[in-house]
Length: 416
Image (cartoon, rainbow, N blue to C red):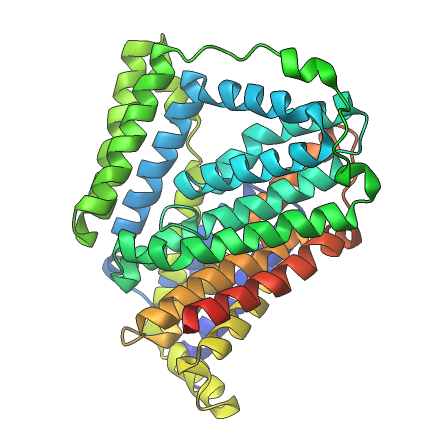
C-alpha cells in the first residue's frame, strides 16, 4: 500500500467511524460537517486537487434532491400536512384501521417526497391520536418509520440514496417504479401484519376506541394546497413522460416553481419554504462525493474491490452478494454512504438488476434497527420529546422480521 492509499484509508475509516458514531448519538448537524471535513481532508492530503474534488461531485444528484426538498417544503407551507393530519385523526376510530391508515399515508407520501420530511411532520400527530384512543403510541410510531423506508424504496425520488442511483444507473423513472413498486407494496403489507401481530390484541381490535374521531372536522382543501398538489402532479407526470436525463432538471424546476408560487399564495411563503429545506443533507452528499472521489483517485478503491473479489469472485455481480453487502454496510455506516461506496465498487457495467438490488436492499435493510435509517432516528427522537421511549430491542422486535421478509421479497421478485 503506497502513501496515498494509506492516507486515503485513514481518512476514509475515520470519516465513516465518526458518521456512524454521530448517527448513533442522533446528531443531525454534526454528520454533514463530518462528511465535508472528510472530503476536505482528501484535498488537504493532496489526494485530490480542488478541481478534482469539484469534478467528483454528482451535481445532478444534488439538483434532484434539492428540487424534491423544495416541493416537500412548499407542500408543508401550504397547509397540506394539516389536511393529512386530519385524515389520520379521522382514522382513529379503531386501532387496527389506525395502523393501516398511518402506514398507507406514510408510505404514499414517502414515495413522492423525501421520507425524512414526512416522518418529521407526521410523528406528533400519530402520538396525539394514539393517546386519544388510549393505546400505546409505540407500535404506530415504529410502523411509521418502517413504512417511510418501504415507501421511499418505490421511486427514484423517495429517498436520497435512490436519487443518487437514479443518476448513476440511467434507469428511467417509469422502469424503476414498475420494478420496485410491487416490492414496496408487498413489503408494506408484511410490515402492517407484523406490527399488528406483535403489538397484542389491542391493535388487532376492530371495535371503536374513539368515536369522537369520526366527527373530527377536516381542514379545508384551500387554493394554496390545490395549487401545490397541481405542481406535484405535473412534476410526476413529466417524470414519466420525459427521458431519464431530464429527471433532475424537472425536479428542480418543479421545486422552484412551487417555492415561487408560495410567495403568491401566502405571505412570507418563500422564506418558509427555503427554511424547510434540509441544507445539511446537500452538504452531506457533497462531502461524501469528494470522500469517495479521493478513495477512487488514490487507488484504494481498487484494493477494496480486490479484497471483495478475493472473498467471493461472484460477490460483485451477484444480486445476493450486493444485497448482503448493502444490508451490512447500511446498518454500520448508514445507507447513503453505503450506496455511494458500493456503486463505485460495482462500477459502470452494473446491470439494471444490480442497481435495483442495491436500491431496494440498502433502503429495506434500514428497517432492521433504529440506527439503520435517518427516518428511524427522527421518529425515536421526536417521540422522546413527548416522553416516549423506543428502545433498540423494541424497535428491532418489529423491524428485524420485517427487514428479513422484505429483503426476501425484493430478491425473489427482482429475479423473476
